[in-house]
Length: 395
Length: 136
Image (cartoon, rainbow over all chains, first blue to last red; front, side):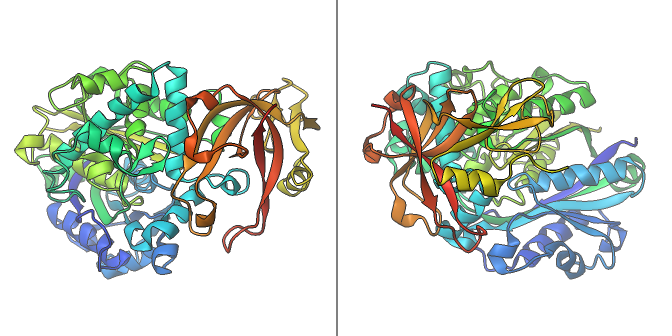
């Protein structure tokens, strides 16, 4: 298997409703990534595009073919990946496989979504399509409701008073907002930097006990990365970022995950695959862009990823151990909660951030010092798809 | 390979307040809702059984922001119930004040009935949902 490098990365602004079409958004990110890689669209052998809901957002199916043509990647294979919020990470992982196998030398991967354009009602309905449609949707399940139930279950499992847990979760939000407020491509850029525990707890209750500020926003946006074999990458950049570990796992209906909840078993399997492949342990990771679709999701994720003990991650946030300069820097981009969550693009947005961190090209206030090894963590559905990647400096 | 129990038959039974599950001949685990194989050991030799429809609440939430088409139901409460036979089942909780739910619900015993979700343009028809009430 060949070594695979990320050569160039790009991301549009993640934001509320945008005027550009999904094809236009992806093409803008894709072309910027191509430019950043010192290649042309003709060098791209295949496209791997994460997109969950374009059919509902714009009535556009098969968006990947139109995106390929739009940006001048003519007649190359273009594949779409749908794994709910993990779609783009699936796309990057498969793109990695094709390059690692030696079949392609240079490919483009990424994702696009216009979730904000749908508005809250349709977005909530279509996101709920990633729950079990026949056995769980009829109860009116929504994504906030899934993580709200995990919050109550977490409090009960680890015997943490709910009010205490909510205050710890507010610290997750406060940290995310602080980092995101200085990320120019983030949805909450310039906003929410002065968030307080009282404001988080006192905002509108979406699904008990989760308030508006416990939840990520609906977002539009795209992100793209160029992957190349080690040989090809050497000719294009002196700062290749190697993908050294990957993992992916799936599981079914939420209630059938009961042997492990509030742990997400697919994440434990997926991340272990990535650690084993990279030959690394959790303590070797300098920063992690993880799937904080809700504040509680960060606590659950850091425990399954091995950064903190089960039931203890809230304390870690309180002590600053999950912040830049702490034990592990979590979501220096602001994460889904502040950078935004255009679901089909989110995983590529995580890779974008990790690569820029390893290259020390982010705003100085949110740069993780001497970051050499980064990780991504993307969750689709209510644990149905999990993807993890480990990236390391190649210079 | 044929399924031992499919959605259609499970759903029709649920609409009569009968909760069907599958018992594995290899490991005796109960699988509900139905699948092709045992959720524990992936064995495919399964028998249809009727569950009691009783259990205890393991977690809950009251939803204030619903999907398009379900706005009229808010606020409503969703629960995950650990059935007496072991598996967990998602459903709604009624007979309580949804605007005043608390952690005290966890551990409470419940009994199952059903309520019809009439379906929407995406759902390929209607579907019954477990509807729990506090026991006694």
